[in-house]
Length: 373
Ligand SMILES: CCNc1nc2cc3[nH]c(NC)nc3cc2c(=O)[nH]1
Image (cartoon, rainbow, N blue to C red; front, top):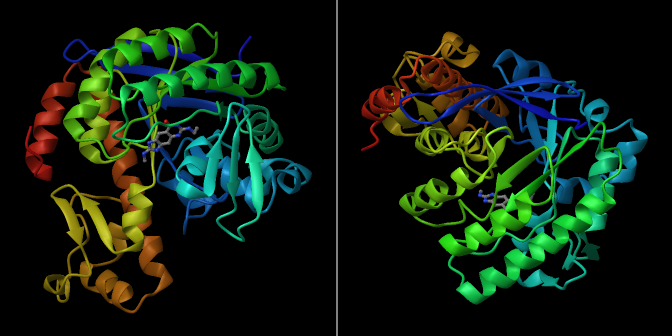
């Protein structure tokens, strides 16, 4: 009945973390999963073949950006986003909500939707729940996100309450406007800021709208990590066990592990590719800022324990040279490594859940990576 169906395989005895499978029109996804972000129909500096090579199962693309350029009608004419970008595995598109809200003073929110000016040429635009559905239906993504408002942090109770109630009204309009329900799954988004009772209210209202999956929004917006973990602690238990839970915008190694322990199944984050473009690598011994002079004559790989294409063939000295010379290959090699690192981490997390030892895995990983528990 839904385009996307979640299968709960196992719950970790140590932590309550879940092992699952997400069946989509473009293939099955093993969860917990990290989704590389391909904002403008490309995961920056990576080809689809390279993404598959490192184990990417699903990627994310941004509705706001593709609506602005090249236009969702052009992508539709190309046969949809999968064809346009030559990616035949699952795609999740966001709804533009978060992007237009981060345009700050350039936007005006009304019950109808959001008026904003283009970040490209300043032209005036308007996105509503209906428009966000039209765009995502044109893109043809397997998973479409509802048009919501991500409340800023900090925000007072009154604002957060009004905002979550509008997000619920917008969700109903999204579901109403959603075409092609047999091939594209709509996920709802729970808001409520950092207020326990408002999270409960938003969860109740959003989960009352029957959908194949749900996201936890309004987090990773500048709040302290501990606060994010606390909100997760009391929000995921409100969510159905037989549907996927997607924590938006989260992706550092510790946040991924802590999120899985608190029952999250899906994550996305620009971090691995963004920090790669400014010369920082995630390695099993913590971050390596390869542009640093101390690596000038370091002829060892970025990460001695990594088996990715970058770590098998290049040294820190060479990659540092590429970064200093502003060579495109620097971004390509470090992005390859960082994405592989996170995808490998999620594979190890899935294995640890299978063996009921995720808390032990967290202790080992944190100790090596240099995190304090
Ligand atoms: C689908 C668009 N809606 C939507 N996207 C989001 C994207 C985020 N990205 C981050 N940190 C990087 N927090 C987020 C929250 C939301 C959120 O509450 N809503």
